[in-house]
Length: 254
Image 1 (cartoon, helix red, strand yellow):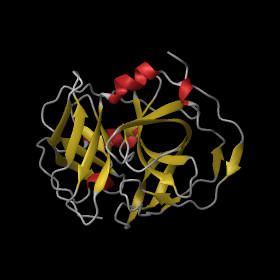
Image 2 (cartoon, helix red, strand yellow):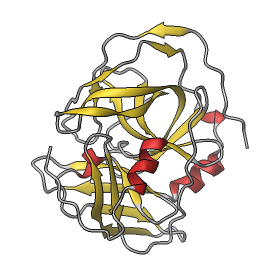
Image 3 (cartoon, helix red, strand yellow):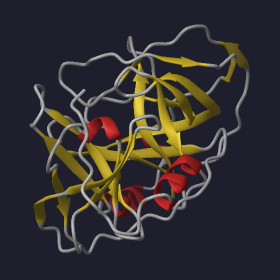
């Protein structure tokens, strides 16, 4: 298996950034005031640098998520944890009563099933789904390392399997608005050198050991190869604080 580690180099100064949440074909903006002053210069690695076997294995633990309760059609990606829960972004399932989850069984059979939202946090932009018993392998979780190569593994806007190469640029504290545009305390996030498209929201970032090191939630508007992911410390805290008795969470459309 190839070593995906790469050192960060020259620092550059960033000013104001505008993020777009890639969960809808309308491409609605939602702004974040990222208290980011310097950013290591990293670049999007070539796909040839990645272990295709690991990519294919990790893909069997990811899902496509869709819903149509709200005025606009919503779609994104998600992934299975070792406890059987499915994780995605809150903005992917906001206002959706029963998200439709598509997964691939170990035998290669495509399965579609309705899910229940049992965890929802509009500030850190994470949601937990219950799809009942399934045979998907769950991802282990690890801390991201600045400069390491990672792969986004999810689904595109058409619900087809997709993946993107990328690199961790920096750990930051992203402050500003939650997914509804209200003020919030923010979240711990990763800055990525990566091309992210609609449908990729909620995708896991996977390192060279096949561990999840972040959850993709947004990209910089304007064609820049810069994206953002929720750090795993936020994910761990979110999962730990889920109630013991899982009940369906009702949320509002965005």
